[in-house]
Length: 208
Image 1 (cartoon, helix red, strand yellow):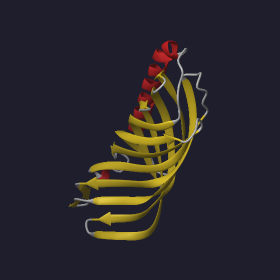
Image 2 (cartoon, helix red, strand yellow):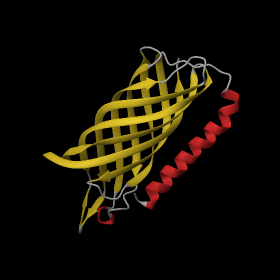
Image 3 (cartoon, rainbow, N blue to C red):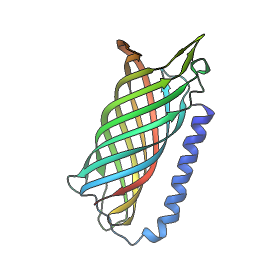
Image 4 (cartoon, rainbow, N blue to C red):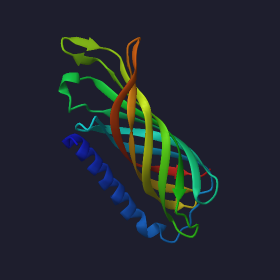
């Protein structure tokens, strides 16, 4: 992992721990809910590694909409976007970004009498990395996009301010392949480029 990626992830993790520690005492006597419609917004630090190479990372944000079928099972759709600082391949300098779309299930280890709710997640989805103004040799490519599917495993903890509002800290690890590259109007398909990505997020969840 590059120094930039490591620094970004460590900084986000540190901020998350500080927030959880700050709210630990006031939250200790409050209750929580995990049922019904829930909406979430988060900031995140993310990293990407292709074919086992060095990781590149950056910061971004995301949205999630979910529905708690019962106290334990929550189905969700999550969309994330991250700006990537591509330092590990200086020969491909440009403006890079990464997007994830996840359809998954979150399993809460919930007790309505507690304000702390740990969870695990599984999700299937799509992942895309795009770039503009990429310098390749003596030329510049204005539009490149890598597309593929992903499988995601994650976990985290929600700390409730009130029964319906919580601070959420989570980590997602995604694996999969880029099987298509688009360069302008051209597309190369049936590829098999291994890629791993990670996302550390801190945000708020609301049950309206």
